[in-house]
Image (tube, rainbow, N blue to C red; front, side, top):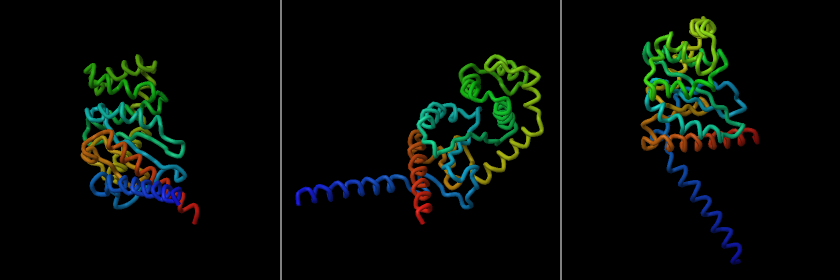
Length: 217
């Protein structure tokens, strides 16, 4: 009987813990549900999209948080970045991002672009300065950089990012979009970057559980 009571106590504690977690993160407070879900690239995985801009100081501050968090994501979670385009200046930095992707050097330059702007004060909106930066940071030939930056396919990617941000309802950065269904903005989760990631983890777990239930049906 004593063991039975102990088991009941453990079960009750676990239930209470789950309920507290659910109560801690509330729709409309800590995250928003998109009115119209956006299709993800891989339905077999939970997708996380970070909407950011290199010129956004909050994104610069958020970078070490998101890097440490994404390094611990399970294999059933996909992570990708998407630049926000709220002005012509932001569009130019979106082009830098997609040029880095096309050239296969995003991992080499992503963090250093933030540092160049916010620590060293380099004006990477000047394409000649940006070209020298890419040459130094990732040994990219100047002609290759210019070709990537001005390619037709790159402009298409920038326009798709503009459309996706509208579909996600993004109005500020950084923002996180979970599985094309939920958006977490900077002002949510007590204005804390770590809290944003805690909410993201909570929603990932919820989406994972939902997928498991649907698979069992």
